[in-house]
Image 1: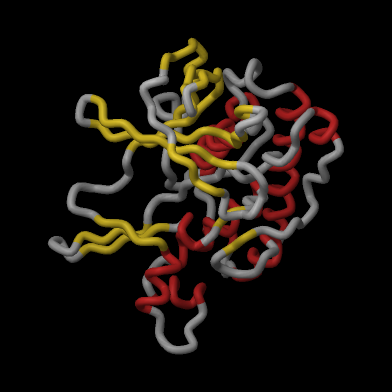
Image 2: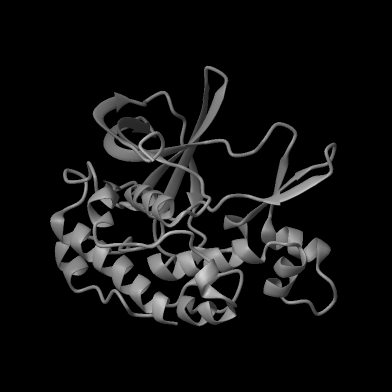
Length: 272
């Protein structure tokens, strides 16, 4: 776990990165910025939290990526690993200090990727539902795990492009990519401690889901044997591991509320 989901707290000069604007598919205000680099033959992708031209970097979605990364490590779920970096970045000629997250390219040599929504349109049988299509493709365990994870973290943005299919035509292989992109989750829309303190961690808020309904709670009903989803249990002692080295990044109020959300939802999930 230490190898991947780590925090680099010493300020890094990342002004060489060129950021592109990606509008949020969830429809909320703001912009996510993305960049990539190839250093020493290793391709990396970078993401910035919510940014606007007036206030700069105002979100903490990148921190959420790291927290969820660690949570999935604990539960034994395959996923993309993120690194949180205290960085100096340049956007449109202006410098900002912000925490950014990075991840390595998860595609194997020779693989191409396609969004699940596009893959579904091209390959689904007439009248076939999205969940049933994934079961036919052999991805039931993956989808069930995804639905359970999205409930625990209240993921608001599991649209069809946030699930990817990887194909290698030469090797005739087809697989679904490890889980990724969990920034728009937890308390992402809380701007300060007061909003975090008042956040109802069990509220079933409308979420964008390619599979199932807009209710992450209702989507749990699609899962057959819930006991087979997670390899490991989440325990009270895991709280320290989730927030290691984040004391200067997230306030105690946010850390307490995020743990309350995850652990209370996990306990409800266990009883279903």
